[in-house]
Length: 508
Image (cartoon, rainbow, N blue to C red):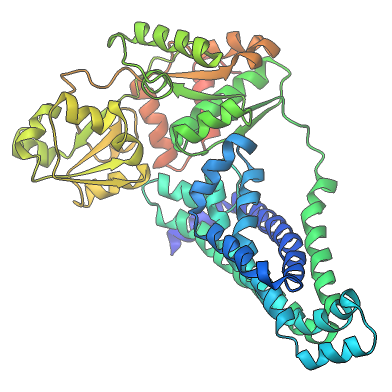
């Protein structure tokens, strides 16, 4: 409990910011769902033949995995709040639509007949009789939709939309840090309960006030949503720099921001923790971000879908630089010194027990061991696919998991080997053994800024500014900085600034 309180005290600002982001995203999504679903539900009561197919389509939309919906929307809407809101609004449609339709249909037929007998047309009967009676049922659907949306909003952090999911993802990335996960999960649950209580109050009021309570609720929600636009006077950024999940990308993008703002008049905004390679690269292609730190080996294997020309870091960089320019019209600036290549790692105990020194040595125990690989590594040629081909390995049991979980799985004995990165902080913390890649499966992975050519044309000064990091930052320095963020809970900004000051790249 004391650790949780300490984490809470250290991250109060971040918590308040993410709660507000979570509330904003949830309310905007709910408002859109209401504006679509309520009129549609009322319309369907006049055309009952098409009601079930339409409601069925909305039900099918809710069965599609939310992460798949977000991935589908990124090429069209980029990253950030827009695709998140579209996906969440789609998820919130069904309860409101179904309740709006059911609420009107279940109004006593005798009342409808009496209203018709009094000379009311369909519209007047709807507004004067049916809607006021059906409003509690409609409000119940809105309550259900809100709880669903608030819970699902946590995944919006995967595409840079913010919210409490940002803290949860940070906890997962820090080796399933329970305190950070709880710091994000508990407020999310409390927010859902709080909003449910408020909407329950509107539901009770609607029994007396009818449609007026619905309008009042909608107006209050809209006022909350638009309030930041009146208070926000911050300048729009000139550049948006994104980063993948993890402490290392977060440190690097803070270095970029510090250097750019120190030596130019540009205003830089950071979007850390945007997810895996595919998400971030799509965001760059689409224009949601202007640059992000990428690795030479990833460029060649994943983006260019080629084999590395050699294991020479200079030749690999040239291949990556030329390939990105020709295929995507993107620029890969000078790489840093450290090589965050893939490794296959295990504990000292297992390595000593079976005499493991090389990846090929795993052949003797391939049926006995359990591997813990990330989904990305498991599906890449410069990963397990290549291990099967080059080293003729067919491991008996492979479990795929998020990057932040694999080191805990190894230390707890749930798996025997993991894929790792050479500069990961837990290599120090767990004192892991790295198996030699004698067949040179993994090409060099040197970090370098990747940006679109048009960005460099608009801001040519970026090349000189960012190339100051070229050839700098050793493996040990990067590993130590990652350790300070992951295990000493220092902020990426603090660690990045300290390094730049020490190397005389930034004034103290």
